[in-house]
Image (tube, rainbow, N blue to C red; front, side, top):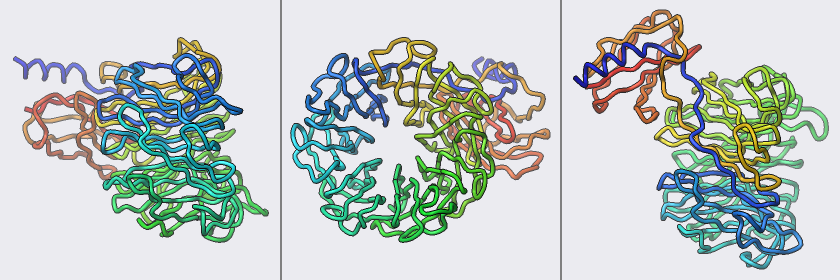
Amino acid sequence: MVKRIDLLSVLLLGTSAFTQPVIDWQQIYGGSEFDRAYCIDRTSDGGYIVTGESSSSDGDVIGIHEGPATQDAWVIRLDAEGSLLWQNALGGSGWEVGVDVKQTLDGGFIMTGSTNSSDGDVTEMFGGSDIWVVKLDATGGILWEHSFGGSGSESPWALEELDNGDIVITGETTSNNGHMTGCDGSTEFWLARLSATGELLWSNCLGGGHVDSVRDLTVFPDGSVGLVGWTRSTDGDVTGIHGSGDPPQPDTWVVKSYANGELEWQTCLGGSANDAGWAIEVAPNGKVYVASTALSSDGDVSTQLGGGDYWVARLADDGTLEMEHSFGGTSGDAPWGMFCTSASEILVVGSSVSTDGDVSSSHGSTEAWVIKLDENLELLWERSFGGSLSDSGRDIHWSEDGVIALTGSSNSTDGDLTTNYGDNDFWVVKLRPEPVGLRETVSYSFTLSPNPATSELRIALNGIAAKRLEVVDITGRVVMTKSITRGAPSVDLSIAQLAQGTYSLRVLGDASYTQRFVKY
């Protein structure tokens, strides 16, 4: 009887287009002053760890360090439903900001941010501002902290823990002394490796004679490191900038280093106008994806939609540009964060003030805008989040159960939001993929046979210009993918390794089509 019910469900559900996810829950956190989140990571218990900056001393914020600046790095831990488990305001009498946080292999957390304090939680200061790395235990207590810098100013942007517990970190520096030996004193990329206890193992500066600002890093399977940001240099490590003038308009600058920090390759991406890289990911398919804000309409940028766009580029492992695409509307759209799924699909989050083009809806002001792309940069879905005031998305996370979470800041009390504590607040939104159902029947359909099946499916594409198949389990997790030769009339798919149950088969191409099947 169960098999008959599943088969009947398959036949009734038919074919439907893949649509936007819906909000599972959203919460704000903070106090009556300025609070802004920059990074989110999922924890092993299904909750989340978030960091940013806070100037509040009330509401959810406890223990802020008072002083001339009164701004701390603020770390919060949430359970799977968004309830606040604990919080910690980290810093001294100066100002601090948290920009990245990750759960570590031992169950604790590693955070990096900027500091210009030498008291409170901060034991040492070298210059105008330093890179600050803090190790927390599972309940938010400080285990150790280290500052890195010189007599100039340093700003961190991203870190990752390696399999052996070491930490790779990147930031930018204007120093040429202290921990920044070998730098030239202009703004440069700084890449470093720390031990599991925060000791500096090695560091390297990358850039040229003008401003080179880093924003993100990714670690390749072999331990090499990819960096992205922007450059206005025409010398040193930088070649191939597109702009003219002295200095030229910035290009997105992508750098790959060997595991020891030495330069492997670099490439400048963009055109004659202002282009700036914000996020980088290496995908399971071996490709490198970069998200930038683009104002150019020449050089590497084939299309400019207006006011600045999400510009996503795919590179080969040697840095060769393989494809690129602009997303957005006629007003300003700026990406901040990116995450790559196990199926090499790309999630990008940022801010948008557009109400046209790729942006299908808006609550009236700046909003968080999320897009999901396939590995060939085809738009799968997009959605705006926010209210009538200013809201932004800064980071996004995807997990194997199909759950998407994003963080940023908000000061709205309408639309997708219901509360504001004052000024900007930390904002976390948890999404789930919308279930496939009888939403949008399309004229083309593909045929599955046999259905139910035990070992192999034959998919007759019936004219669909398909590029790839995905098999999705009932939790929304992609469990299998297969590329399709363009124009193929049919494809065979082995499902012998799948557990018994009901699955969705997505056919992805110029559009997305879905049918259910039963494996028994």
